[in-house]
Image (tube, rainbow, N blue to C red; front, side, top):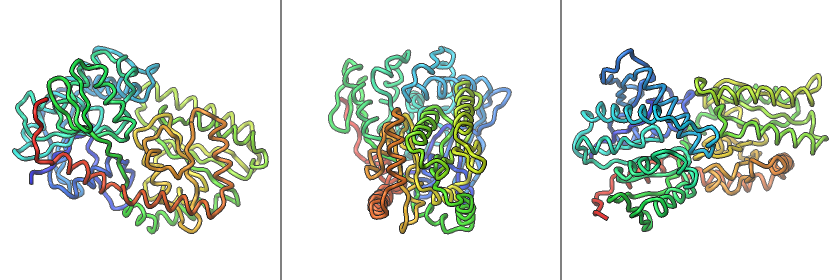
Amino acid sequence: MGRLIVVSNRVSPPRDAGGGSQGGLAMALAAALREHSGVWFGWSGRTTEAYTGQVGVQRVGGVTVATLDLEDQDVQEYYNGYANKTLWPLFHHRIDLTAYERAYGEGYARVNARFAETVLPLIEPGDFVWVHDYHLIPLAQELRRRGVTNRIGFFLHIPWPARHMLTTLPRHAQLVEALFDYDLAGFQSEDSLEAFCDYVRHETPDGRVDGGRLSAFGRNLDVGAFPIGMDVAEFTAALEGATAREELERMQASLVGRQMIIGVDRLDYSKGLEERFLAYEQFLIDNPDQQEKVFLLQIATPSREDVEAYQEIRGRLDGVSGRINGAFATVDWVPIRYVNRSYRRDQLAGIYRAAKVGLVTPLRDGMNLVAKEYVAAQDPADPGVLILSRFAGAAEQMGEALIVNPFSREDVSDAIARGLAMPLNERRRRWEVLMEGLKATDVSAWRDRFVSALMAPEARPAP
């Protein structure tokens, strides 16, 4: 059995048992690398005056890590540019924010070629290569051009856009064609998988869809939905630790007899935070008897602060939260506690448990592990209620949540009222079903399904 070579934009191996501030991607990849020896390759996060192609190798958290430095121009055009000003907003259906600049595309192609050149010497015959996310869609194509015949898989952590959205992208056909140099492409949800198949059917001259095998551009591609899970055992173990207990006690003391609604997100326009604040305001208007009895704690971790759209959303959220607090607050109650900082996962575990309602309402999301973490953190004897956007990939798996349309203030307002008033028996029943689903589809199941499909021995016949 060959090694597993994982390639992602950034390398972020685990450094402690509590998970630290690791995100869902980092924790999922770490779990995969615990099972299969190999290498995790990606950008170091550092810039160099002149690109050298030199690879640094070290052992971190039991994982062999190989990294390269990029030039500042690479970072601006490939990462801040094409990845986060072009593909990210487009794939989240925000074409109003999408920047179609030729220089960005050139930088994206250049960095993918550099990734291929530098990872190539690390790939041995029989190894399996697992490429992650929208930053590296052309990587397999670049590796094939350099003679790599190993099986290569690709997993997209964000949503795949609807066909009519993707066709707004210059050279969209070339981007999709690059995916056909992989052996396997995985998506977070059936919705994203169907959107990709829809593009192949209607936008490629020779496109055919036959179950989980697609044919186009003279090649075949196996595809599937592989919804990512969380490490349930590790997360629930963290709940028993001192950090989580201290955070829970701290939050319970701060409630002062009130009920807490929790939102935890990266500061990103795709997360629907402005719409969430306005829906919560609608709840306060619709339910005046709940004023001073409940508050929303919104943790929004800053990200991509060099991108103008992120600076703008932060400014708008500061304004909306301030206006709502100014309109409704009393001398001893603030309706929104809005926090711009990151917390460790074991800290979040305690915060989640103190919340009566988990509010997860992205406008569009590949999966959203916060929804799963909130459920996993609950007290089985007195669990809280998850309110979940229908446009999060997690909604396909978590039907016992209160599924809402995040674009409708009234819909979310009604769900908040229903969640806060939900009887204990119903809360327990919903939580038990959700928790059973989390355990059955945890990160190990995700890892095993994808890696098993990637390592399938049969070769792909020509179309």
